Length: 139
Image 1: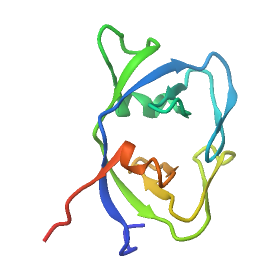
Image 2 (image 1 turned 30 degrees about the horizontal axis):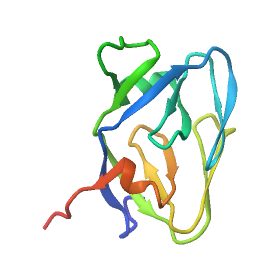
Image 3 (image 1 turned 90 degrees about the horizontal axis):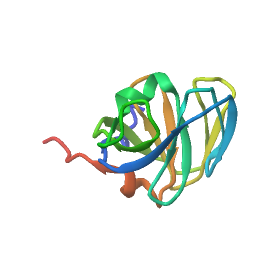
């Protein structure tokens, strides 16, 4: 992605999301595809009631509890403004997640996101501005 001239530096917006934790292994159907989760993984509910899992080992680095919620408890969490690489895609594409089972499907106009921690994601074109802001180009 870094070599593609269309890749932009972006930052996750600070958003309050709902979080629960999976009681058992399972699958969550997302707009982009079915994503497998393990017991203990976070299940995020976004502002439009969309849901997606985040592995427990990546969750603590990406979200902070909003008081009175305590870390590790279900409740409101704020997404941290972490930098990402984002690439607007011109044609349909598929991303294989780190579990090597789950696959996300994107279409033309959707964004491929590199979180910088070895994981990739897909964000629908219509939702990109809700979750991310592009950083100004460096002169």
